[in-house]
Length: 135
Image 1 (cartoon, rainbow, N blue to C red):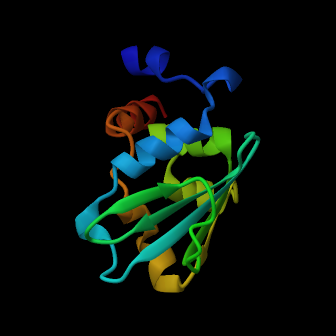
Image 2 (cartoon, rainbow, N blue to C red):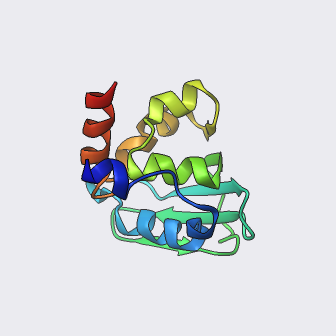
């Protein structure tokens, strides 16, 4: 019950792309990253600032608001509200890919491992479990 009411669809005034990117930056599974540096570009639609980059290595994760000057290895394109829902566990990653509400492009091995690089929201497991129980 609490999950249902606490984690409804995000309202337009809650869709802060910089805050979302900071949360993502803060929840990287460092042990799951490739051995070489990887640059992920996030292109959000529906946001005032629509492009961000994560430059990630086993040693550090940097959130960039401007092009860091490195080649992009993975390009993620999504509506900001959709990515918020993914982050919160309201939709599954595979479901978003199948519905093409999120696209992830790049080298196949990087694209395949992309969802493992993130721990997602702390609430996501409970939200996913409540969603499965309701269906």
